[in-house]
Amino acid sequence: MGFEIERKFLVTADAWKQAAGRRFSQGYLSRDPARTVRVRVVGEQAWLTIKGRNAGASRAEYEYEIPVADGREMLALCDGPLIDKIRHVIHFAGMDWEVDEFLGANAGLIVAEIELASADQAFEAPPWLGAEVTEDTRYFNSQLATHPYASWTK
Image 1 (cartoon, rainbow, N blue to C red):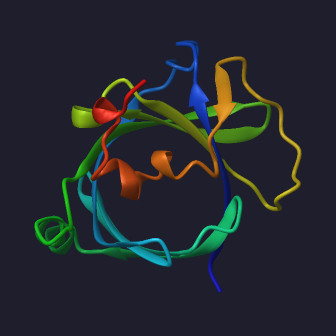
Image 2: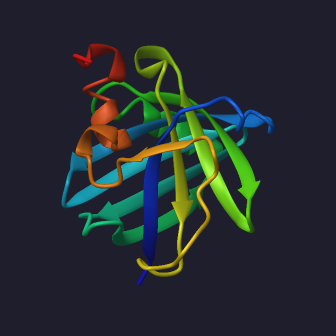
């Protein structure tokens, strides 16, 4: 069974901007919280990902590389607007952090994620890390597609 344990945090400073990023376009064929189905295109690669319901920082995850032409066609079938972001991978204290800089209707939102081997795995927080939002559904990409950051009352 595929499984991921991922914690998500807001980013509060620019010190992470040391690495070049890759532009992602992704959309959702299903945004049902019990089973999201995502299509992601990054350059000349594409993936289809199925994720189960979150249980804290954990959930089932199955990811399959698909032909990029199929991925681009599937993006047109997605439910709701696409997510557009630049992902930067930052190595800090022996761990890889994925920092997503959102574009379009989600511009201004920057989120960092770390994948862990267990829910209680210790890690050192980078100095640019802010509040944890792992369990705040507003920050799920599937929600940002239809309830973008620009529309939030801050």
